[in-house]
Image 1 (tube, rainbow, N blue to C red):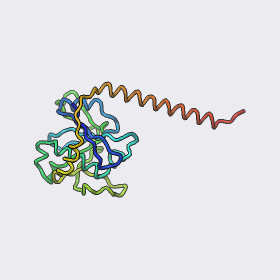
Image 2: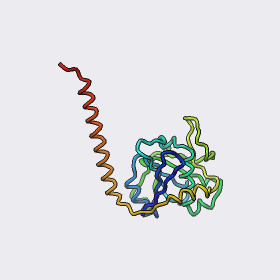
Image 3: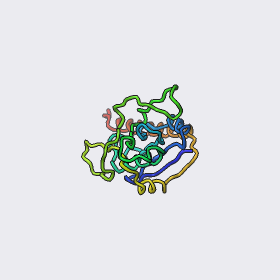
Length: 200
């Protein structure tokens, strides 16, 4: 079972998903999208929580996400960590996040464990105002959770949906749609070139 949430902290809303357990997390590691972002409590056991944006990444690249959105994900990760949920305002309540392609899984790792290809592509939380959506363009939202915010967790839990997912079928359908988009773009490009080419 995969658990889905919807965050309306930003517009358009985004999908958040996580596995029910570490076995399901292994499946999710095989089928994430290059634009997905992975969240986890630093150095503690927690749920693997993923952000999936709508097409076109309207909320920016993984390292420039709005603070309100990062805060939603950080609260959800903390709430789904038995040990992290009990800790307040210390290093253990930091949440880390990285783009999905940076996750590294080798055969000798236990089920549910991951590492990173590049530590430079991992954001580690520092204290910020979770409600601060207006930021300078060079600032990056950080995922530090001083305390659990039940209002946020409850808002997200109201959108919670659990369902069986055929990961392979969804992957194949996604590839088909991407192929159609590429073909349509190629036809459009060829049409423009034809229309712009001189006639003799």
